[in-house]
Image 1 (cartoon, one colour):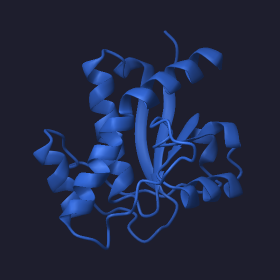
Image 2 (image 1 turned 135 degrees about the vertical axis):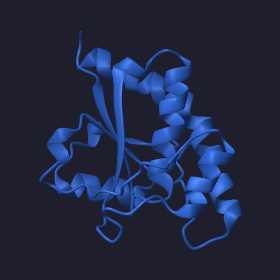
Image 3 (image 1 turned 90 degrees about the vertical axis):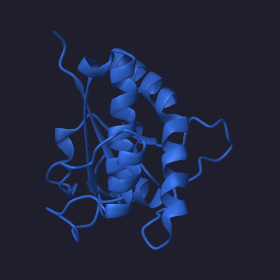
Image 4 (image 1 turned 180 degrees about the vertical axis):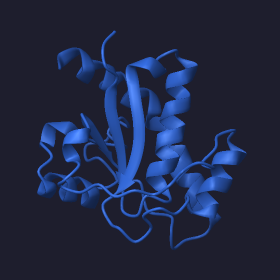
Length: 160
């Protein structure tokens, strides 16, 4: 059997957006019988939260949607471990820039909101400093793009 495509969801601290994106896309992949094709994890470009669980507001949003972030432990992506991953899914343009600055090839970086058909790809705004509504907004952006991302990942896997 082919090795699963190793996909890393990336945000700043790995406690809000990227862990939620990981479980949202993983659940959609499972619903479609695609989970064997992929290995999903998430990480942050910063090290502030390494080893900590998901933000309680993100974890609560996951539970509300029938998902779980209970086992999440924040980790950091660094130039040392970029070669452990085939594809990086950036939550915003800063994360995209930071990944490329670490040595990730631009063609390995996909923006999470690239599947909305907009001329310029918008960011998934960081809900950390806002209220609960920001976490619902983030979830809606993630679920809206999950199918397009999975199709893109399947194409990537076929080409590599």
